[in-house]
Image 1: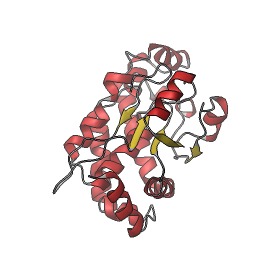
Image 2: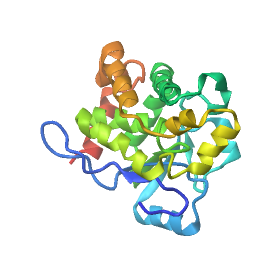
Image 3: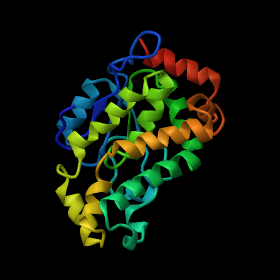
Image 4: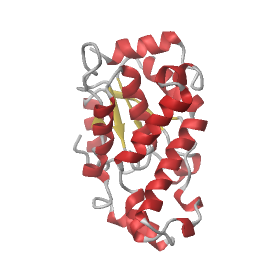
Amino acid sequence: MPLKGATNVRDLGGYTVRGSGATRWGQVFRSDGLHRLDDDDISQLMSAGVRHFFDLRRAEECAREPCRVECVSVELPSQGVFDTDVATLQTRADGENWLFGDYLRMLEHGGPAFGRLFAALADADGGAALFHCAGGKDRTGLTAALLLTALGVDREQVMDDYLLTNRFRGAEQVPHVVDLFVDHGIARPAAEAMLSAPRWAMEAALETLDTKYGGIECYLTDLAQVSDRHLDRLRARLVA
């Protein structure tokens, strides 16, 4: 969606689902931060039918850069970039490993938050829903990967969706953020990697979902405490 105040706003519709059907267009969107939206951007989201907004950021991020629309907070337990020892962020491999570690952390500790969000998406009558974080890449990326997997989208398409961020909000699109990381003491190769979407990191996280947590069904019904009713409703709403 071509907004001026957000660059990574994408419809999760159109992905084929195992068996038959595809994810519905115009029902769930993923996005980067909504704090820079202007009135035209908000009008465009409203015209697209978006009525439910969910913010995956930490409380201090929400306070520092509040959304331009009313959002429900569903904070994911992610690691703050500036809470990391910069001595461990020197190479591109360091940056990519930092992302992988953050994905594992969210899987381990984020079950309740994912459960609240998925139940809310299942119950989001009266309009489309949008979930977002700061860059629309890591917290949003893992959430989208879990949602698409739960809906029956195959792993290859899930990865295709994750990798699209490299086109819309990779390091080349946000050089000012790279510079901010570098000014903090993070080496440039690591900073650029942290602002990328490396395929292997999400693939390895989803492999961990399968091997450690028993797959998406077990994860959602166990750690995330999503009821069978909500899973059925989610699939009925989002798959055509």
